[in-house]
Length: 88
Image (cartoon, rainbow, N blue to C red; front, side, top):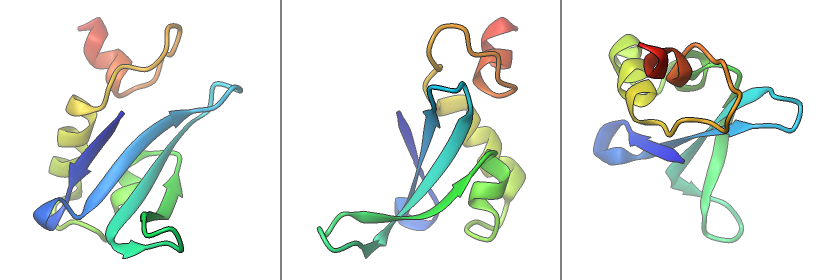
């Protein structure tokens, strides 16, 4: 699942959980296509904050926006973002 954010929804963040149960966030830029004319990945980070730092003015508000909308991960994940919200 992904969430669009930034000015005119320019960026897309995608949460990926690896087979080793490590979560990474990939950010793509719609205005920077790759060789296949698809949005290129411009960042890969272990947290939402690190992934969007410098792309938006209000990092805290955007982080909450993304965390509230990103899909719940596969069964067994215990991350601080979506799983914590689901446990409340």
